[in-house]
Image 1 (cartoon, rainbow, N blue to C red):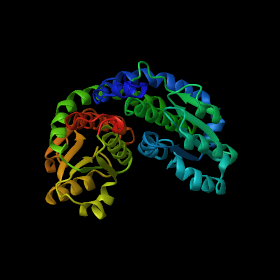
Image 2: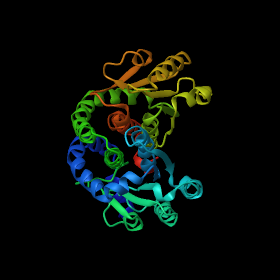
Image 3: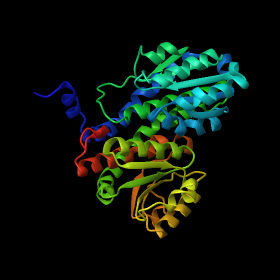
Image 4: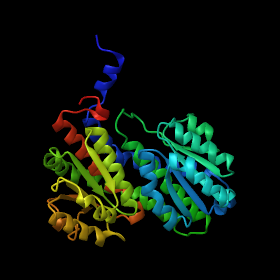
Length: 363
C-alpha cells in the first residue's frame, strides 16, 4: 500500500508546468484589477508620497520576481530600490535601512505560500526598525500577512501543486502595481495608462505561449543530454534568468545557473563542457547590444546558444541555434511578464525526456 507521501508525489508531473503557463494570460486579466484595488487601499496618498526607498524581500521565486521588478520601482516608481534575499535582508539589509531613514522606507515581503520562515522574520525585523511593511502572497490569513502591517493577496483559482509559475507571475504583477502606485503618488499623469499596458500584455502572453511551445520541445531535445546549463539576462532579465534556472533545477534536477550577461563573460565562459547550453534572454532594452555580443562570443566558443528574444529580433537570434520568440511589445520594465514563459516549457519537456519528476521525487 502506498504512503500518503507517495500519493502526493504522483500528483506532481512535469506536464503541470504547461498547464500553469496556459493559465497565465487569464490570470493576468483576472488579477490586475483586484490587486490594483488592494494596492490603492494600502496607504494614504501622503503616506505613499513619503516613501523614497523600497526593499523587495523574498526567497526563491519571490526573490527572482523582486530582481525582475527592481527596474520598475526605480524607473517608474521614482524610488531607490533593493531586491534582497530574505537572508541578506535579515543579516545585512535591515541594518542598512536603519542607518538611513526607516520611516521613509517600505519593505515588501513576498511569500507565495505565506509561510516562508525567513521572509516572516524579515518582516518582523523591518517593523522593529520602523519601516512600513507589506506582505505580498497568494495565501490569505497566513503567517506573513499576520506579521506585516498590511497585505496584498493574489487569489489563484484551481491552483495545482507545481514548481511555481502562476505564483511567480502573481508576485511580479503585485510588485509592478505597487511601483505604478508610487509613481501616481508623486504626480505621474500616466499611471492609468501604465496599468492598461500591463493588462494589455495578457494578449501577448497568449501569443507568446502559442509561438514558443513547439520550439521549447525542440530546445528540450537539444539540451537534455547536458550535465548543466546557464541562463543569461541583465537588468530585469537577470531576474527572469534566475527564475528560468530555478524552474530547470526544480523540474529536472540539472544544475542550471541564472547569471548576468556580462558576468558570464568574466567567469562561466571558462566552464566545461564547451557545448554547454546557454539561453540568452534579451528583450529590447539597455543591455540588448551587449547580449548580442555575448551570444556571438559564446557561439564562437562552442556553446549551444538559444535566443529568447522578440519575434522580430535579428541581432541576437542570428547567433543562436534556435530562437524562442516572444510576441508583443513591452517596455523593458514590464518585459519579465513575457520573457519567462519558455522556461517552464523547456524544463517540463526535459524532465519528461529524463523520466524525472519535480523536486527530485524520481531520480
